[in-house]
Picture 1 (cartoon, rainbow, N blue to C red):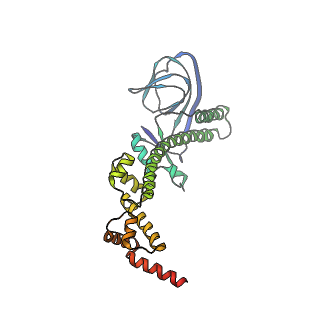
Picture 2: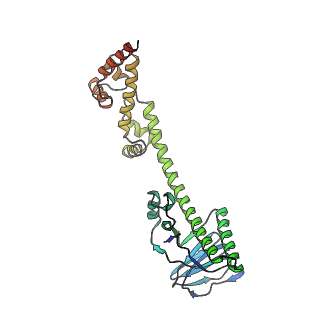
Length: 304
């Protein structure tokens, strides 16, 4: 579950602090009228909200919802920060990871777009998230501690400062989520892209031969249709089209630099049928190979 939050609307921080229980302790029962953000710095925090049980450890972040009963269900030593807040522009989004991935990968996330108006900058905050990168986690802790200092010292504009620090925490978390998902996505892309490029190199190295589907399958040990889809995705044409293009490029090179029969040129680029070769040549070049050859010779004489 995610919360869709408009970062152009500042939240109201009503309470912020830090507790550290070195002996076993269990959270009291409560129904709050505001959101509560828990950030666990150490130990174990066992909390139940409604019928859902959460076991939080270092790096875990949990958002408790208003009007929902929560209570500790097991005693333990723990060290955590808390922020109570209210915010007007927030929506519940029951997205699973796949749905959120699709939103991000299709550039529907504000992280990827040029946000011309700050008020339209939405982000997605997970109800429960584990920060694995300690450097990022300590930056979040620092934001909370600075917010607490503003709150308790009554510094000028402390309400606004606390609100902006909370928004900063939301943004840090959202960036971590996006980076994680993008890393997974690009690792996947890199693997398929590499495969497509290897097929491309294979075609270029064997364009003089009669490359069959069976040869490609044997070389890469993948289904041909799958390889063809990958190839087209990254190169804009099918394997067969690219092979034909490479053959015609090689044929043009031969015709420009050698006095040979069209049937020989066809043979040199791995095409047994001269008629088929001529038809294919015209398809890609616009004129038959013999006419291309004559034009090339005429150009050479003109330049002389």
